[in-house]
Image (cartoon, rainbow, N blue to C red; front, top):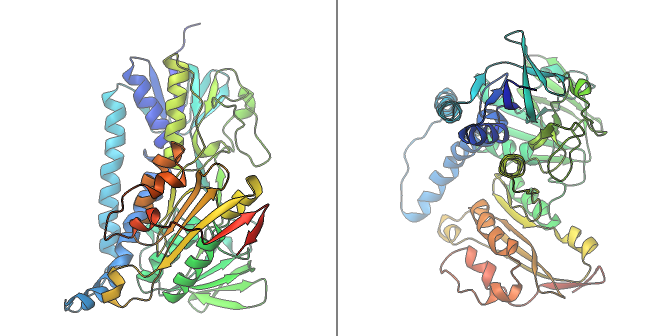
Length: 461
């Protein structure tokens, strides 16, 4: 059978665009459809604009810290519309680069929602026509959970809308305790907004190392963020020009804005998956095998729409493995082991490998190296902020299985730590590495004695 395309990609985010651009560059006939903007969540309304906001919110502390180094900083002011306009300009530039890459590779670009009409058929709703493809890649990503069961949820914003609010609120209440919640809490607090986090769990940043979670909690509270744990929203209402939030414990909060940051859901609804025989799991994610292949013979899925690791670089990696396997004849399974990640909170977190809690379950016998210290910068700035570094070592193999940093540039450190850990580095490898002095990162190679040990899952102080 002759098809219109060798590959049709549904979704113009990082994973979909990478696959479409590279495969079109191989001389294949490629079509790609995106119903919103090319670049996906990360570029358009996620990681990239978020980090620009993080930078913006850091300057107030920089101005304060400068005094300890002899600088006199004059009167300062912040203009929210200027930040929004400059951010929009940068996002537009990046979206243009994504489109240009596809165009230069001769991919057909469609500005349309695309749905499956069958195993090899894709309907472009904006054009009211159907095209055929030998292979189909689904890379539609996810969307914020808007908690429709919450009374008043329509009064709240999510990470989609937060980048476009017209004016900076004087106060905000954020529901959630993950990446998005703690990052935006830091952003708003840094910009002078009265900020409260409400989280259903006992501590923020579930799945991260408990020492990191507790340390970040303390540092955020020092910066003025109120964190309420073991509570949820009961309802949100309008009241006297503000929003009124009633919590499960009975407390009532008042704020200018209320944000829901309670996770993301896969965008698999009304995609026509049942017509193509694509199976979903209990959470609505597309079920894939170790090569990203779905239950349909000619359909694959990468990125957040599949229930694996919801990070942009992971989606790109999965796409490259798909290309190797299906178009270059080099079968390659995505490697989801030892993935570095960062939380751009205030202060920042960088982490690689397992938490202490996970390591206890999986390994049992561990050497734990931990240091908490005042960064050199703050010896003169006077800021009461501590950096924390922690290495988790398998006491039998001596391999470093977890590395966690909380402090300035932690994300940069995590990226570099991931390389030796991916190679199987031992604590002895860390110990024989010469330190770079004076840096905070030198602590990672100068912790020679364990702070404590775990034997058969039990801490030995």
